Length: 69
Image 1 (cartoon, helix red, strand yellow):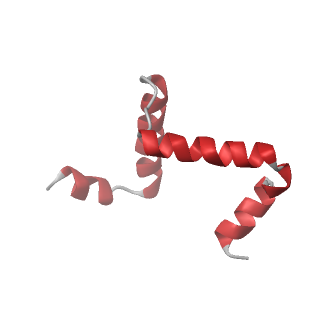
Image 2: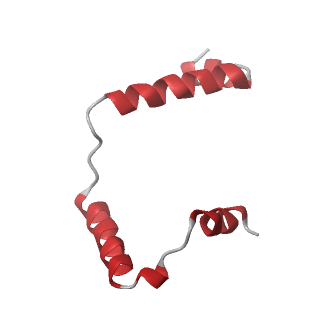
C-alpha cells in the first residue's frame, strides 16, 4: 500500500491531526518564497487597493463569494 493510499484510508480526525502537524511544521520552517511574477501581482493588487480603498471588500463579502451566495 502506498503512503497516499494509507493516508486516504485514515478516519477524518486522524487526517486532520496529520494536516495540522504538517502545517505547524511548515510554519516553523524557513519562510516560503514566491515566484517573482506572483510577488509582482500581489504588489500590484496591493498598490491598486491603496490607491482606491473602495475596491477592497471585507471578509464577509469574501466568504459570500466563495460560498456562491
